[in-house]
Length: 477
Image (cartoon, rainbow, N blue to C red; front, side, top):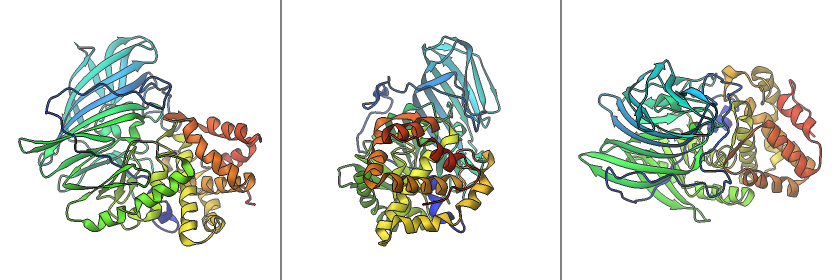
């Protein structure tokens, strides 16, 4: 997104990575997924829903528990070869399982619990014939290949119009898939309410290296190909999972609180590393306000894009000056709490992610610039009524205008108004408490608005309705 005010929000979509130098022999079995240390539910168990904004993507009949993806990329032929093992829970009795998988990919074989299964692959719908029972677990194995293509995005932004797998002219690859598009490179229940654990193995010819979410648990060179294996052991929605492949180098760092940080940048671009080294200071500022970083590690990845995205534990940034600015780094790191640790149930409530990240960005900017939060909000408020009129209320936006500025500025102003109503001490206490109270799960409009009412002892339902669903902008105090 570019233009007046757009630069402040261009950080809507950014990724991040984690790494270690652990090694593991080629072909060794992937360990079982680790249960979430912070969730009372069994690892990966979710309550999938049909998305109210984009109902054609995802299927509430499937609860993905763990994806094990083995991806081999041939940059010269542009062919991706994939082997996928999906552990899932059926949520209802049915005679089939349905996943999202782009028609650009050819399915070679499918088994369910070790038995060959018939399937139909029509457009993006992969339907596997197999009788399933509610709350029973199944193991679906899929082999596929093809030339992945990006997916058209339902947006009117200028900085991106497709999502999913993107191949550059030199064969490099990166993926960003908000609100959907993960199905462009693997079979997935591509909807936010279905959070799962991931193991991702990537193979590509040297000097290329594959980068994905979580911890780098293995890296080896085998027959001229670089193999990396990544593990994400806290549940993540599919739009928060990513992979990138290119001639990348990694530099290590550590935050003041001890969080391992990795900077993945194109070879021969040390100036980009210098920009990313401003991240630890921003993370320390966020931890002071939001509590300990909710994951084991954090990474940043620079790709040849005009946009970026905060995928879980890995922040992907386009190779532009603004995308690597300190305020964007703060915005995208804030999403690790608001968006990743707690994720919307569906896309109607993307304002929960972007509004708080935008408010936190504004609060950081005020401190950094030696001004007040109010002065930053005054500037942002000038355009908010027009944005609301053009794109709709933040919690009822135009589905063809995903990621427009209305979901950023209106909710950011709302949080500032609530801060002034409650006072700084109470407000910041609750901003910190919400992610911890709903850690590693999903939430919707009713969850967060009723929680704030309960915690404050005030009926805030009208306040939230006016700011999030009102056709006109509420007055500011």
